[in-house]
Image (cartoon, rainbow, N blue to C red; front, side, top):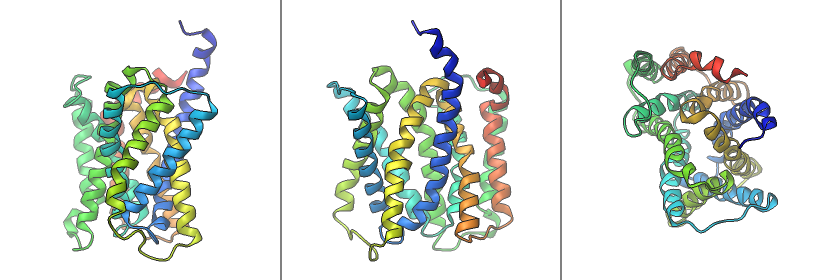
Length: 306
């Protein structure tokens, strides 16, 4: 039985986890641009995962959490670590070699739309509604607008755009996967998060150490950015996101990526002097609106308000 005092604190905890992870991940695109100065995309992803795993391990030790042997969790950790961490981390780093951090942040808003698709197809946890269909269609229009498809792609950027869109889609399928297969195993969220990031680190290691480890001399900006991405953008962020999944579900928790475009665009334009084409923020707003409609955020607001 859950004590009453925990029920009272739940709404505040949900808001803290929601906005905390949104702010951290929104700023990640800014730091990726600096990490890219010295590391290849696989390197950015590897060091981010390694530092994130070490951070989570320290959290586990400080909180006195014990590991329980579970072969199923081990296998699932490698699976979710691949498509929800290793692949998108590397793809976003690759993408930002060719597109702005603001663009990458806006494209990340595709995640809630992809989550709804996952829930309606593979995971089938809810029925198809008119709002979801309308929202998905709006989201598609937003993606087309965001990338300015009528202008075509430069030869050095179209693969990057596809990679970023695919990365955001991977995140969309990750939340439902974790909620359906990993959370029911009953392990503490810190252990589940550690398994995911550690699994991604192991998968990335052979890919990283068989190529050039750095692309330019290391400097304080690239090293500091990798440290921030690992400790905060991976380690601390997941201590917020896993509880959020348990509290409000994968559909609502994935909408945390509706916050990230605002943070990413602000940092990119103000601090990196990135220039936006008129259709990029318009497309980003359309995607955000479509995701909100598809997930029924407006209807859920009353449910999670207090």
